[in-house]
Image (cartoon, rainbow, N blue to C red):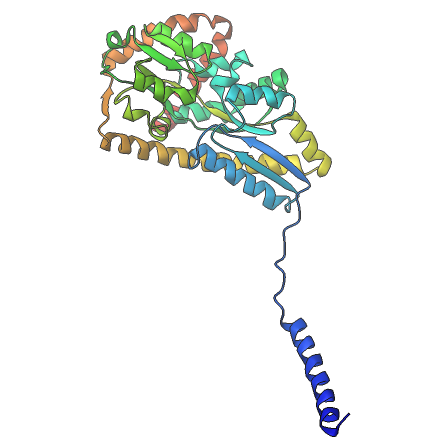
Length: 350
């Protein structure tokens, strides 16, 4: 080997070694990955993205993940991906779904005691309803649900006040008579619509737009946000503000989900309950905002809005009184609910 090569080789070796060291020191660091969850739970929500209850579901899921250090993950399935509310409740009974947001309207078909909460013109306003549900009376219903179908009620969600919307003007009780009005799977709602002289038509939520457009039904009943989000205002441009019922909703947990949480860590069921209470506060805030925004959007979109006169409202209320007679066995409970409204009103005035 010549002298030149003998000088170059040691230098090349040194440069190679330095290069290797620098490559190790300067190489990009791998991103730290979150630990895989030890428990994955499914949350069913039949409303679309952006809806107040859906947003509350995602907030609940985030809080549970954060406060369990990522050990528990709640996956939210919106837009009814896991089935109708009735189907979801059935699946929850045997642990097929872990959490859901369900209307008391749907729960009534499983726990008849909750029909009382759906009675027409029962509450004076939303604060009256929260006084009932957030207190001892609300706990009576949560206990009844747990006892009857084994589901744990974690939080009461707002779903607003319900009105009628139709494809022809309705301004009086007589105008409503004979109209085909869509209802969900609820015998209580069937009774209300029938008592008001209209024809109740049970129909899946996703089929309402098409049925209105084709004239297969004359109208439906729901709250402002649902009316706006579904686009039903495009094919039913008349809204009658009668406020025939307020139907609260519940964030529910299956028995199996609560047992799995407790098995993973004894503190986790209480953590989930705390997260649900915070999601409840968020949902009610989002709902109040969305209800106002949706009504304004619908008015701006050209929806004709009719508010009942006091005399007409009295006729609507009188028409549904036979429904109350069917609940004579729960008269004392109904009076307690009404008394909450009177007491709340007195506190508000003072």
